[in-house]
Each structure stands twice: as C-alpha cells, then as structure tokens.
Image (cartoon, rainbow, N blue to C red; front, top):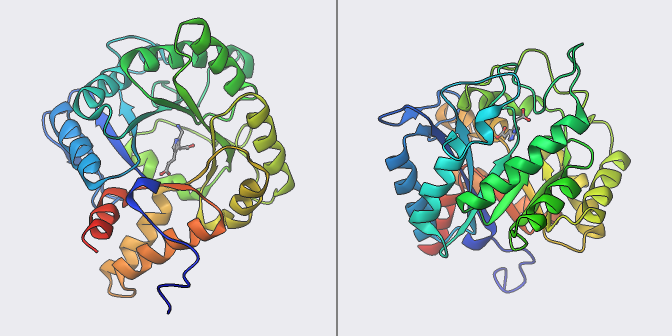
Length: 310
Ligand code: PBG
C-alpha cells in the first residue's frame, strides 16, 4: 500500500552529476571538504562521465580549473581553454547518452575570483560581463555542450547568451538558468574544489537568503529572457523557493544540492551520527517533493546506480 500511494519518486534520469576537470593534472586529486569528489585529469573525467551515463543520470555538469587566471577570465573563451577542452572530451565520451552540461561563469577563470569582470573601482561590471558570457556560451556550444548553465547572476545573462547562441547557429543549445541563486555559506567546499581565488563575497550579485519574493522576480526575468530550464540554489535551505518556482515556471525546474549540503551529511555520517544512505535519499526526496523536476547532486551517479539496482 505504501509503495502504491507514494506521491514522489526518484529516478536516475532526474539526477545530474557535477564533475571537475583541472588542467595540468596527471591523476585525480581528491577534494578534502567533499568526500568522494575529486579534481580530475582528462582521462579520469571521461571515465567518470561514462560511469555516470551508464548509471542512467540525466546529465553531467562540468566545471574546470584552468592553469592560469587573469583579470578578464580570458581562458574561458579560448577553444583550448580548460572548460572547453573538458566539454569536448566528455562529449566525445557520452554525447547522445546523457546531457553534457557546462557551467557558464567566469569565476574559475578570473584571478580575483568574481563571476564577472571588474570596473576600475573593483565593482563587478554587469554589462561588460554579459558580452563575455555571450562569447563563452558560443565557445561551450562549439565544444559540444548540449546545455549551458549561466551561474553568475548577472542581470540579462540569459537573454544575452540566447541571442549570441542563435546568431552563431547554436539554436539547439539549451540554457539552464541559475535563476534564484543565493549568496550562501553552503558553497564553501566548492570553492576548494575549484581552487577559488575569491576575496570577499558575492553579495552584490547573488541574492539575500531572506528574500523569497525577490527570488520569484529573478525566476520571472529568466523565463521571460528565454530560459529553457530554471534552477534554485542551494536546495535544502530554500525548499519554499523551489516550491514557488515550480508553481510559476512553464519550463523544468532544477535544484542544486550544493557542496556544503553534501559535506554536512558526509561529515555526520563519518562520525556515525546519521545513516548516510537513508539521509541522502531523504534529502533528494524532499527536494523533489518541494517541486524540483531534477536535482544536481554530488551523489547523482551513486544514487542512480542504487536506484537501478533496486
Ligand atoms: C559559480 C558557482 C558556484 C557554485 C556553482 N557555480 C560557487 C559560487 O557561487 O560561489 C557552487 C556549487 C556548490 O557549492 O556545490 N560559478
């Protein structure tokens, strides 16, 4: 009876696995604050992408750490830049089996660690950043990304990227918009995973955790600019925002179960304070119940495998 009347299900296709490529590595380097996660070289990246695809995940989300950074994030645009190389390698490995998604943001590529370029007085320059995002979107699509995921919270980013993709013949490349992204303490471990060089915080462009109505406005803007999917991030502390987004969105809603969310569960499980697998399943189910159609999770491939095994 309980099985029959269950309202919300988890299935492998709803899960997206983030993967990190680091330029110059010859073997994987584990990320201390994210148990089970490693920075990968190209070989191990392809292997991890194949394993995730075989587990049946809906997609993989790629991030890259370049060998060199500068004030404008130049390496993000170059065909031989770290993320474009990673996308091409993963597309070669799994294209057509699972979606190849790529983070579209400059923070991994700038020496100051901000998501955009800066003005002379050190503020993030929204409109100058849009032009770079547009070029980066075209580069990622050219490298083989099925989906580009702008995560920098610049105003107008979805519209600018859509226009550039269409103008360059990439009308089939989809945009997964980080629509409601909060300035969150839960991103801490991720910044280790990408060797972040950020000094300060992102409060001039990411949202205030206290603002629910403001999140609806951000989602509305991205929908109007042509987002193909919208995302809420982080997930567990923002279930109300996921629920609001699901109620208003005409396109699929995703949630990002971020690094700090996974680190808390892993750390407590390591101490024997909670049941790791049951807790993971419950967090994912709760995020689905709130209204997410899909979830980006560091546990995606693992859970997909377990689900397939019954
Ligand atoms: C920015 C970006 C961040 C994450 C994904 N994309 C970090 C930030 O905004 O500081 C965080 C993901 C996580 O914590 O798992 N490009």
